[in-house]
Length: 282
Image 1: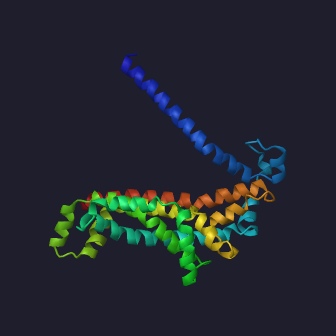
Image 2: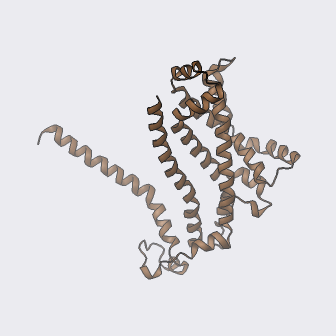
Image 3: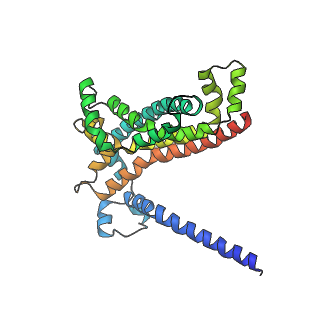
């Protein structure tokens, strides 16, 4: 064999080896947790390292226990409402702000990107007390609406930072042609800019959704006194108590990843569709 063909085979084998090791390192713990959630607790205690339990031992009783008995189902519903509302509002405000930062001329336009990133880098604990005092005065502590306001304020800077980059890739000539045809500024954003930047909007919305879904500090600060309004981060935290069986903890951990994984696959389809649509309109 020639040297180029030998190098191609060696590099190909090395590539698949690296991929296999990476998949085993990332998916291995998740698979082990999923298998634990399908076993009775007594079996896990006696044989904790048994990766392939007998078929007669497989049970899904841990999932109803986590969802109903420990209230994780209600927590997931609360988190779903908060995360969807946060993603929708953050994208709505961020699209307008990012477009203004990219296309409009104003004082400090060159440094606005740094300001967005600087606001996002502020640690949440610094904002916790002012936000708690503010929401207490308007009567929104202990409510999901107040938590949505906090999450929107927390995620708009990073959404602006991300969308600004995507909107910069939209050709200005397309916008100029639309405005010559009589398209107003808001109609221009809705009919021209958003279809072309749809992949970036979908990616940003998914990122904001995951931030709101996984957030713990502000949920603990504002909702700890009302168990019925707990989000999924607070619900899964209670399953880490010593009295909770390991199988229930694993079942809850697997269950809370389902909406995020489903959102990823839905967004992946939207990314492909949006990219194709943008290419056709361009």
